[in-house]
Amino acid sequence: MRGFPSLVAQAARAAGWLRLLPLLLLLLLVAQPSAARTDVMVPLYVYPGSQSYTNPNWQAAVDAIKANPGLHFYIIVNPNNGPLNTSDPSGLNEGYCNVANDSYIEHGCNRDWTTHLATINELPNAQTLGYVWTRYGARAVGDIKADIAEWAAWETAPTWEDGQSVNITIHGLWFDEVGTGSGNYSVYSELTSYANETFAAAAKTRKKKKDKNVAYSVVLNAGSVPNATYEAQLFDMASAVVTKETCFTSDPAASGVEGDCPEPYEPFDYTALTAGNGLPHDEAYNSRAVIIVHQFVGPPNATTATLQEQIDGVVSLGVHSTYFTSGSYHNTTAEPATVGNVGEMVRIATGANATSAAPRLGFGEQHGGSSWMSWTAAFVVFWSLYSFC
Ligand SMILES: *[C@@H]1O[C@H](CO)[C@@H](O)[C@H](O)[C@H]1NC(C)=O
Ligand SMILES: *[C@@H]1O[C@H](CO)[C@@H](O)[C@H](O)[C@H]1NC(C)=O
Ligand SMILES: *[C@@H]1O[C@H](CO)[C@@H](O)[C@H](O)[C@H]1NC(C)=O
Ligand SMILES: *[C@@H]1O[C@H](CO)[C@@H](O)[C@H](O)[C@H]1NC(C)=O
Ligand SMILES: *[C@@H]1O[C@H](CO)[C@@H](O)[C@H](O)[C@H]1NC(C)=O
Ligand SMILES: *[C@@H]1O[C@H](CO)[C@@H](O)[C@H](O)[C@H]1NC(C)=O
Ligand SMILES: *[C@@H]1O[C@H](CO)[C@@H](O)[C@H](O)[C@H]1NC(C)=O
Ligand SMILES: *[C@@H]1O[C@H](CO)[C@@H](O)[C@H](O)[C@H]1NC(C)=O
Ligand SMILES: *[C@@H]1O[C@H](CO)[C@@H](O)[C@H](O)[C@H]1NC(C)=O
Image (tube, rainbow, N blue to C red; front, side):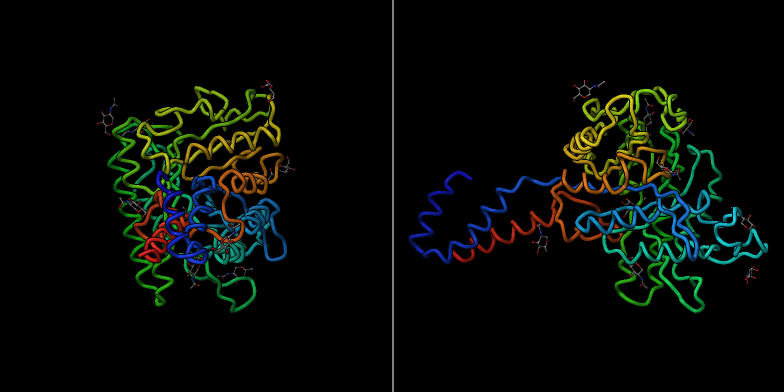
């Protein structure tokens, strides 16, 4: 910025006020607080509803996505601990499934999923991720690959209304229960390579260019920070890695949720996160680290103000994405950390554009440091220099 005023004066003399416009625009852009690029990662492991009924927990997520068009929402869908046999024997799906008549219906056997997935796919700032469990490296690789192949094959499926074919495409994977012991490297390396190849192959078969170049991300839920060498290996094979998944409450037993809060348990507080504890050892990975906090309930101080404070803090760390919930993973409506409040607070914390989202990432692309704002700034700099020459 040094020498800037003299440049302005010189420019004013040389060119008059009109030619100063680009510089003034540049000043405006530079004066804005630099916005961190943090998005929302929603483990939406809830049943969406049926033909005539929408689960309020699912609808709350849809509402939050619509209310924050400037934020990107990763929506992890999990019909049945994975994509296979997506039936709900409880009857919410009105019995139309293989459980009821023992005949397998391809891709989202339960049509309730097709209708509601299509709703998410229509939202420009939402990206569906398929849930895949891996049991810390102990689940059979063949079964995991079968889940991956199934997710990649979801394309279109009929809704309840006859003949209505809708878009049920899945735009990446969430690998859950990722082994943090470094001996797991070869398994996850094999799985993520297989996933990328399988999704890329599926995209290639699509006719339209826009359907070939679709968004795609791989997220590994390690839940904590692995050793520095393995950490680098995990970040190299994924779009993002969850480096902290824990609870907020200081008394998990009070709400009977010890299972959500991993041992050795320390209630979440962003000020306690350090390199190697909640954040990657290597700061360069922060922009691809994910932080998830369950049980945002008291004691102590689980207020809206505390929530905004924690979300501001997490965003200030420059992480890839985050999510807070006042319940377990499946509850998007429990106050104060409802999905609606969390979306709004992340938007406030990031200063995200209120009307339009950064573009979704396609195959092989990663969130870099360059936001739309820095590109705009670069363009204006170029324009300014150009107009003075
Ligand atoms: C899904 O259902 C089919 C057909 O009933 C069955 O063969 C298969 O084992 C089931 N898969 C899972 C993962 O439950
Ligand atoms: C399964 O049962 C339902 C309800 O009886 C029926 O409408 C549907 O056609 C059956 N599905 C298949 C694939 O046979
Ligand atoms: C399906 O939805 C995804 C996500 O919005 C989009 O990228 C893709 O182009 C859609 N496909 C079709 C055939 O409409
Ligand atoms: C860290 O991870 C690397 C590579 O995955 C492994 O070779 C090494 O033994 C690990 N170190 C420790 C201390 O666990
Ligand atoms: C994978 O990581 C888990 C911890 O998350 C560990 O218990 C297990 O031993 C590791 N597996 C191998 C093969 O090292
Ligand atoms: C609750 O928040 C207030 C104000 O931020 C703080 O002074 C107080 O120490 C907090 N109480 C607990 C138990 O953390
Ligand atoms: C979510 O939490 C709200 C408020 O505590 C509760 O009314 C609702 O039943 C919960 N939903 C589920 C699916 O647990
Ligand atoms: C958001 O982006 C749009 C399109 O780039 C722009 O027209 C609008 O002014 C921006 N809004 C804010 C609040 O920055
Ligand atoms: C898989 O694709 C993701 C997203 O493009 C990428 O970040 C990651 O490095 C790829 N992993 C492998 C093993 O190719």
